[in-house]
Amino acid sequence: MTRTKSTVVCAIVIAAILNLRVGAESSSTQEHWVSAWSAAVHTPLSFPSIPPVPVFENQTIRMVVRPTIGGTRLRIRLSNAYGTSALEIGAAHIALVEHGATISPESDRALTFSGEASVKIPPGAPVLSDPVDLKVTPFAEVAVSIFLPKKTPASTIHLLAQHETYVSELGDFTGRTDIPNASVKTAWYWLADVEVWAPDHAGAIVAFGDSITDGFGAKQGEYGDWPDQLAKRLAGGAGLQVIAVVNEGIGGNRILYDGAGVSALARLDRDVLTQPGVVDLIVLEGINDIGWPHMKPPATNDSSPATVSPFAAQSVTSKDLTFGLRQIIDRAHEHGIRVFGATLTPFEGANYFSSDGEAIRQEVNQWIRTSGAFDGVFDFDLAVRDPNHPSQFREDLQSGDHLHPSTAGYKAMADAIEAAVLNGTRR
Image 1 (cartoon, one colour):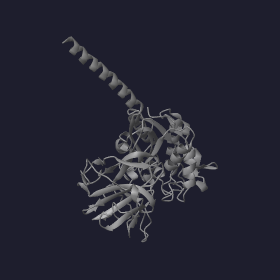
Image 2 (cartoon, helix red, strand yellow):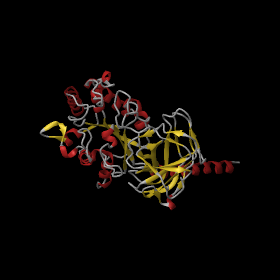
Image 3 (cartoon, helix red, strand yellow):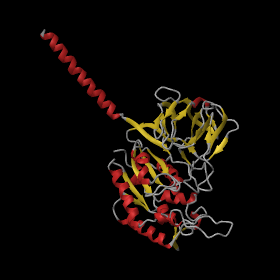
Image 4 (cartoon, helix red, strand yellow):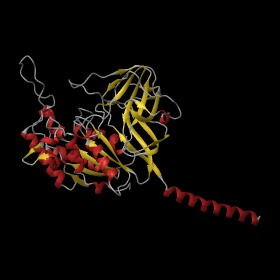
């Protein structure tokens, strides 16, 4: 009886030691999901120059994205955030891109959702795919193809895609190497995130802003926006850790009011705080809050009097904007995310410029630089302004509308970011 008890006790002790050893090994090689590419989804915009909302039926959409870190295991996140009915995905695949809409056939992987090849996403909800094994190197283009069997209006989109999207004729082409006779769109549809299974020290930086973060003015397919150019800098620096840069800009976005997408305060949780692996946040928001109330309506052909901006009642003060920025800082800090403020870039010569607005921009920039509210400051204003006329862009750094940078302007912004302060590991 005593021998039996001793044997049992010995077995328990040995098992405990083995468990401790296994636990120690697991903790030393722990991995986690990190957002490697992302896009802020929003409702279709109804501005006069924007095409009508597309409707898909019995068609395949192939979207090309470029993750900024690599891995050997990945998954995607689809979003029906703005749908009013369930979104039915008949099939979904992921693969490496050879060129255009053509994928590398040996890299093609069918995606499943809780083991099923199809999924119905409830209105307002996201869904994660099951992970697949696929080796992806940093900055390699990846194609995500989804098949929509039923009539489906594009309710949840990202308008300014950094690469062309290909839409098939009738049929499921998700597993096909090419999509013949595809039509081309300039938006992403329902695709919100590509995540990689990465080492514990890997993390993500979120670039949070409006069209100047989204990359308006950069040529599609060249990845000339400042977040992509920053990612290249970080990847090329000696000794820098594995860190992704994901772009959560929305053209026309504002801090305090909805418009092009819900306000920054309303989308912060979805686009930043719940993103996997986020360690740092760079905020460039506010110029649309300042400018939209002064937006000049398009000219009419009948010489009728110009109407006032439909946003005239939504004017803001510098105090309003610093309140919004403080809210972003405090909410991110609750999640252990460091927040870096970027100064607002010049806009004299833009459609909605006003001297009152310029005074507000200067006040906000002064607060960003001196308040100490941020964990660090990147002076985009200084990087791109004309030293002889500081309320304007330097001519060779703007894209033509005096509001959005050119690719060279975006590079100047990326170069203004002190890479060393973003060199930290996941904490």
